[in-house]
Length: 444
Ligand SMILES: Nc1nc2c(ncn2[C@@H]2O[C@H](COP(=O)(O)OP(=O)(O)OP(=O)(O)O)[C@@H](O)[C@H]2O)c(=O)[nH]1
Image (cartoon, rainbow, N blue to C red; front, side):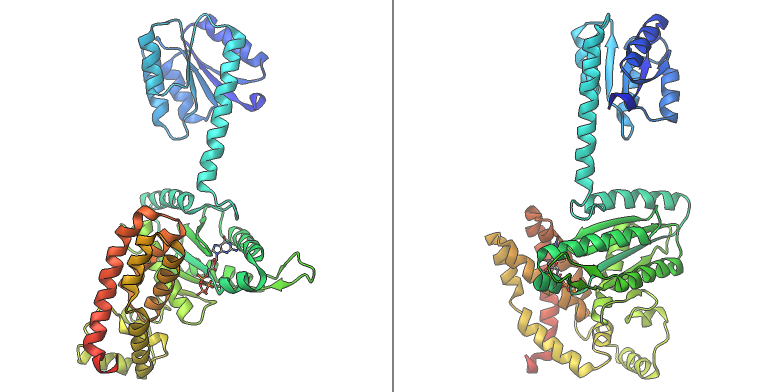
């Protein structure tokens, strides 16, 4: 590491600077010298360095000020204080501000070099750990933490430049079947191939992340909805043509498809959470509408409200509902436009499905509460996952959103959050069930 590392040496004493430069270059480091705090700050604003050797007492801009500035910057390099003061208060103060180490002058070259090696080793380890924290170990794309961090940065930049940002949520279709048919290893291999293709299909500055299991996201700053849609469709088509050959005896070939929900920011104020939530709903609509497609607000089955052309029959149905003022009130907690569209406009079939929902999920509240109290993650996961999918299909979007949050927490084994996330699920489920009891009492 030493040969590639650049060290910024800051000292107002010319002779110390020369001596340090000599010792460090001899040891194989690249050296940048600054004869005071002001010059050092200028250099640090322009270029990154791997380590800083900093004198404490300097005229004008002091070592304390330089150190404080460095520790406040992102990716700050480690700083070793190099001072003629052996005052214990100085040592404590500098270490408390954030110096990595404190060496007194006159220094012993081999000791100073050992301390530099140590600080650089520690920096390398910290960087590795930080990157592991943000990277999905299987696919090597960003994990949720890394994705959100980078996407939020990209969004701030886009907002400053008044650019639109699009977010796509992507979920592999029937992925469970891949695991069940070919085994978990094959499933892992599919995830890796999916992530590789995803990374290669989008632009370098788009942020790609694995959000959970078989769900991925792409944040696209500075893009129009048309271009974002084209990019998603290009990926979707490339994926459907990708043949994954397993390393088993018979070289089994697998093909997969993906469902994609896509949203673009409309206002100047928006958040990553908003875009992800909206895209997620559209992605579930893509699943309900038959999978292997990209759904945006303009081609969503529930986009009549946004003025998208629909057949006359469907328009008449809408108008009838609006005239009877029952769009909102018919089934509390349920957007019947979404639900009815998911059964291709067949209202009586939709009603039958609601009856089944009531029968199958009437006890979910108690079952979920029990699973949380038993800390039975597998049962909790299975209950929330199913409830999430079904609530989206019937158009119970509030219930869907809350169940989705709980489902995600089970993926991430976020046990502390369960109780907190359960409450809105229970309320939304109550609302839907009570509404169904009131409207369909004779059939339940
Ligand atoms: N091999 C593998 N499987 C995973 C991983 N993470 C999650 N899974 C599996 O992904 C599957 C997800 O299945 P579901 O969410 O039921 O959905 P699906 O089968 O993809 O069906 P749809 O989304 O409705 O099209 C589950 O069986 C999980 O066990 C992983 O890291 N590796």
